[in-house]
Image 1 (cartoon, rainbow, N blue to C red):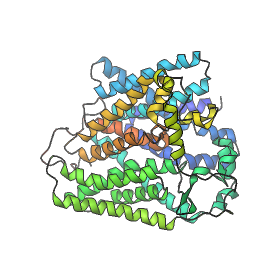
Image 2 (cartoon, rainbow, N blue to C red):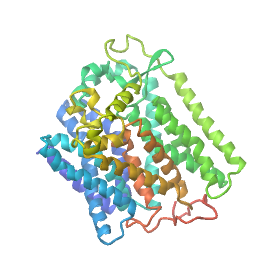
Image 3 (cartoon, helix red, strand yellow):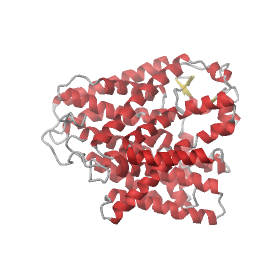
Length: 486
């Protein structure tokens, strides 16, 4: 009761806030996801309570659930009125498939916790998209959410540099952080190197180096979180420069902070996506609805070179880790190639992917219930969904991502500065999903799913907004927002 009552009140408060102040709700969620790890560790150290720290980790789920209930009601209302956009019908269909599998999973003697974990991993990302689309959307709302993404990226980028450069490994051991990972986060001791998990280290040029994680849960969470604010910042920088305006300070700081966080984490796929965004956004932004002018090629080159320069700084300053700094028997992250091979081998067993095995039987949240590491995940959100709720679930998830990406990339007019980077980021993540299961992780990509929902309202009429710019073609697709929109 001591835990249930506060969490229930949090859900009610979340529902009230998303109704009254939707943009404030979105901004609050972003900061909850950014600061969660710091807050939980601080509370754990101050109180000494393992259970309290574990329960605090559920605060984000409860916060989303409260707003999600409101979003579902709004979506039902719009569906009954015949105003629900077709893209959201795909999201609704996916949610229905997942909910249908709750009694099926229970009938197969799965535990309630396992069912809840599976449902959460599948439904919550899509639920965030629906919340953004039906409860928050609009051009002014997108500006407010974008601002929170930018400021949080500045904080995360600086924290990554400070953490990796100035905080020695012995500090984490001195505060007993190894116990936090074991008793609060559920890691096993043999997966720790000193006080940090094995994937916080990486072989690089014949040495073992430590990847930055800043104030996030791990390096992947840090780097994937920063992709969208990086893309939005690059788009705003080049929009301003092409319009002859001064360099936007917050956007520039956000681009630098995001680039630092992504490169200092040494996460290969996010680095590749960010490099593509740095080059592709100025090319496509200026080329929307017209022939590509020669200056755009130069701007794209400048943008790409700037990102590569930050990557070079990261590699040059990466601290090497000696045998005395980490536990000799603990593993070091040798890359994800082995996990991908295991996933491909599992695909040969088509039965579970066609008919499903039940909620929580695979996916990153199912590790607690897996009998072996090979059964934890397919390293692929589409296959994870199919293995849990059948092929229809996996196909609906893929269809949702494809349709959203296409819709966002087709927008013209003032809104392109929002929709283009969002569509490019989502499309890259959708393709990257064949090699990474990160799309399921709301700590890192929850804000991205939410902003995709907000940006979709700039593509189609939405019950959440009447102020979105028209998606029709414009003579000047890079025209700056009006003062009222700012």
